[in-house]
Image (cartoon, rainbow, N blue to C red; front, side, top):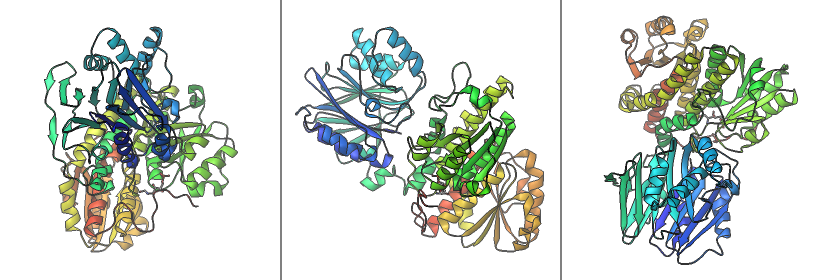
Length: 613
Ligand code: AGP
């Protein structure tokens, strides 16, 4: 999730860019860069210094040309290629005249790069984005102006982009374009701006516009013109932005948690992008463990803490079901104290949003010491866990600021289930057509999550009705159980109310004694194969006076008989269901916490990353 900014028409262009980039710090990044264009000259500076990159970049700009009126700035959240200066944006074409900045993923970058190298282009980075600079260079050589060159180049591109381009041979012009990754345009008298989101230009532009998918915008000091990818003129939708900077950083939401809950469809789509080749093979460019090694895996052990452990528990069902490999899930802080058995063919997967949870790092270190191969599934490029592992899969959820994890959970489940499908392909445990069908189903989860998110008001009604309850049980069967655990954790850490996640079948083995009027039982009942048993569990608790809330699919007509409240979700493949069913549970915890006046982004006693054992 990179940050981009562009400006055309100011004489203090560099300072405007650097200030805008510093406003994007909350998006998280590992490198930064700027490019300026003036009469016949494109000048560039880049720096890779983690969160100090913008400060380091400023130091690189001491000899920047003065008075240049056109410029681009970029903060990078690496997806392809290590977070080093050579991979930092802006990227240049061979002539050094065209500079591009990009947020997104070019799925067919490998085939485009191969074609361009064959035409003599010299690449200087290992990023997917650099192909855009050389594609545009080819079009400019063919005599197309910058807008046309960008438009025709993008017709060849598959994937997501928020792109901005300058060219010293067309001064006072920036061309920008968007597909999936966010992009806005801003104007002020004599100046035009672009940015990946509002904070970067909030105090500069006076009027704001949204760029929609497959639109190309040509910006100059006098304003902008917009086209669709076919070249037909389009009008940009004007935005009403009356935010202060803090609100802008939250994307207009009341807090980061609301923003991150809303970002889950985008996080899911980003996690799946560019990981399914045209021949149907599932591939992780960055993984770093061979197909042969994966074929030889005899046992998988997942180690994780908190929410990540719940995602790992979901993954256990998927890996065993699809790849027919035995899987264990360990609480990170317990793993190394149980004298774990590690045989040849054991793959240990450390799951961690931050990649800095010391319990999980220590667990994977112990596994490695005992001879296991270690795969990290993490959201932070070059995190400690990623660096120490033999292989890595990034979840691409974008920076998660709120202490309570939401979008990271769905992205982890998606990445782990995609990995499970890869294992199934390599071990030929499923017909290829079934893998393909499941991959298509995984792609559809983003839209199902969007539909679940649209029912926030129904969840709010239940939260209002149950306001004041103090004792909660969350129940589920099969993958509904880790979903229940995650729902209970959200309620605990956000509201400070007591909640326990339990296997629904376990209640009668003791906890049923706690059920009485006033206790709330929340059940996940979206799996048809588990439905009848869950209904009977709920009848037991209802008979003892509990208030019953059920997460049920839209077509479930029998649930109303045992539920006081029903939280409806779209039906999906049962193994994908945790990514959809968790949405009303996240919203329930969030809305209850806000009603209680809790600090939802910074709950008491908790830290975003637990770096102590
Ligand atoms: C989840 O909402 C909590 N913030 C916490 O349980 C978290 O999931 C856990 O500390 C693990 O963090 P990690 O994914 O960064 O390793």
